[in-house]
Length: 242
Ligand code: NDP
Image (tube, rainbow, N blue to C red; front, side, top):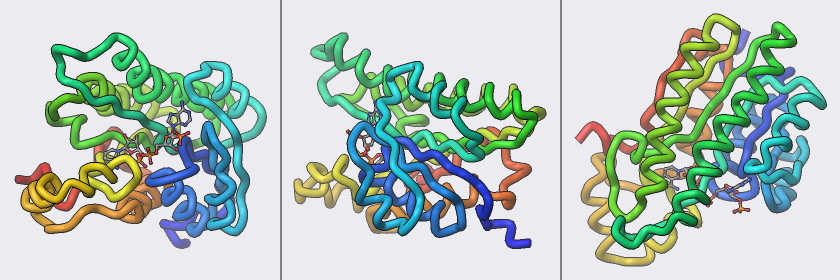
């Protein structure tokens, strides 16, 4: 048996229209899963790249949305990738920018996990959850207070859910990406000084690719990681090792 095969599994990836989410959807599909590429906007391009699978229009901040999806059909793998960021100095940070980020990155992530977990446990089935954390699950960062708080929450919730559900057949793990080339980081790369400062700080000497994260997501979704619970896998070119 190929312990990295996802044949016969159904996976749902949030925020799959672009960036890391799109790469994860394509990689899970390549490993054999039937993938539901879910997002606030059309994921048709991702579905075209997969060659099979389907798209689903969903805003994950709607608490009923996730419940309806998992109640409607058995899903084996959930990848919580959807995430947003707001930047401002701590002294100027607004309540709206706090709430918007916490709603998507922490609250929606938890309630999507809850809806998935309830359904898998009720079916007495097995499941895999892969949450997308960040370097800022471990570090403070600067000018991103709600993002840092939300990503620390992702790390904590991943461990809490792993504790509660490891004995119920659900693996809950996370990936902490370093600096990855996506639209999210385009402005950093466009500033030559900032770009060089980031490269100088990465032991591997290059930005990460969405594929680097997708490969780890396949592992954490597959039977190969059946004994892995509550891990936050750093995929950061060695950033946190420094
Ligand atoms: P993008 O901004 O390219 O993609 C984010 C995705 O999340 C988009 O598809 C976005 O949809 C979706 N999304 C946001 N809010 C919602 C919502 N309420 N419901 C459904 N979908 C939503 O970012 P990346 O690909 O770079 O980031 C993906 C994940 O990786 C995020 O969680 C991010 O925090 C994390 N990460 C990224 C790093 C990087 O260097 N790029 C580093 C560390 C972590 P829409 O297009 O409609 O806005």
